[in-house]
Figure 1: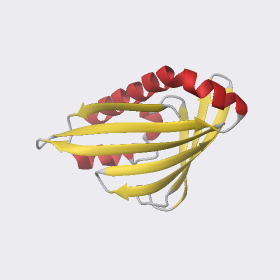
Figure 2: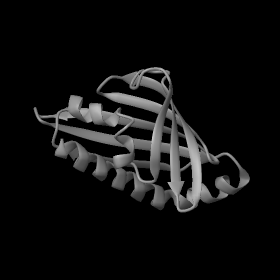
Figure 3: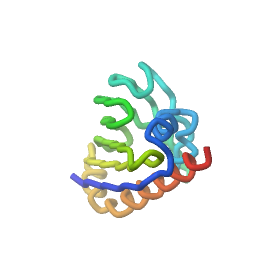
Figure 4: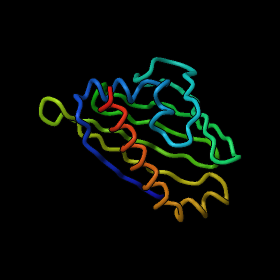
Length: 146
């Protein structure tokens, strides 16, 4: 199973970073290919929350189901992502750095759920890592503009 980990530091306190992280309307501004994040059930940031992430890559559209399995508000979130031939767990950890900064890390562990993605997903690890790092950099820029 491919595992990708990336981290960055954002010049804003954890509550500000968390606010942007959990805002479905802002998610497309920092997540490549995401057109819309739709809340289906629950409260954003609370365990049990379900969202549909609508992506477009070139001419291909697909939807991932995002279920928040565990939440320690402002500190840790674990979500289960599924659809489009993948199943993954995404863990997001936030920690205060001094008074006005936040360290944020994301750990993605995924697997293919069909013969094609089982074969190709391990080969895409570098691409997934690069995309995760770019998304975190975009999140940092967005938060620091607020």
